[in-house]
Image (tube, rainbow, N blue to C red; front, side, top):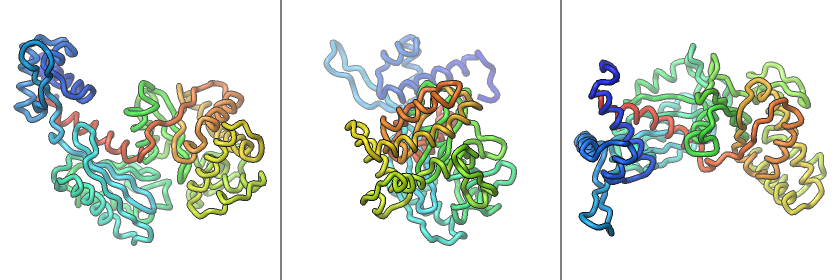
Length: 407
């Protein structure tokens, strides 16, 4: 709202317009009368507001409310085609892209497998994944207002180079961000993948209503997102939350952590330790011998352990849960001592597989290890949470731009 004076009719109209648009996003189509009641505006003012938003292409008539005395009331909803955004979730094996309209509905998806791709093809990979999702949505690349790309690690704001993710081939060129900016016609933002999971949980999932929380993610790697006073804390180089490198009791001290891409907490409680723990406890079955990535094997083991624990059985599987919970709580205790969060959100396929039995064990251990006692809750955004967070991040900025009627 640059160039306007607070309190002027133009600014007040813009504030009312945004309030109405937010209500339509939250509740879906509403009548003029209902919008007036929810905003506190008179019927004439609500009518003027809707006419103004309809003329701007931000709302459309969607139908009528029948079954009441008198004429049927017209319903209005946000014009889904007023803007579109895209999100990309990148790892070493694939890029998943999605396009959402301004209401948040996903309208296009595409997955590009990237194992063994050459380093110099990253710009082409991003373009191919984005174009696949855009085509699936029935749009063109020029219809996308903003793209948010989620990757492991973080781009250092001082150098523009990707840090803390040496396993991501081709993403470490010092000119990569400039090349992508020159190639793509829309604004592009980059965010750590676990931070985007926190965005998804804060907007749509378990962290709604919480301004101070830690999200612990355990899937292909072990990481965290830190939300303080409602905002992501990224750190000076973008490395806040790279807790896999955290030295912890019970694990050998790892030196040159960025070169070996490992650290104490990762070695103590990462997905790769579950097979070893299972063997140490005498578990020798098809779950360990079956093929799959570390986190796929870990998830299978923890799911079996959770089933066994819920059935009240004893044996190696409940002990596996105990050992793994202690490892997770050890790292969380250090984080809790520094941050004192209100809640800790446990997320990622590995932790999710352990279910409530694992969550209860981690919480009990953390009670013994930490002075403050944050509540532990399970993450709710289960399907592609990195991608959902990327879309939500892009939508927040795009809505601010598109819905600003004061300009």
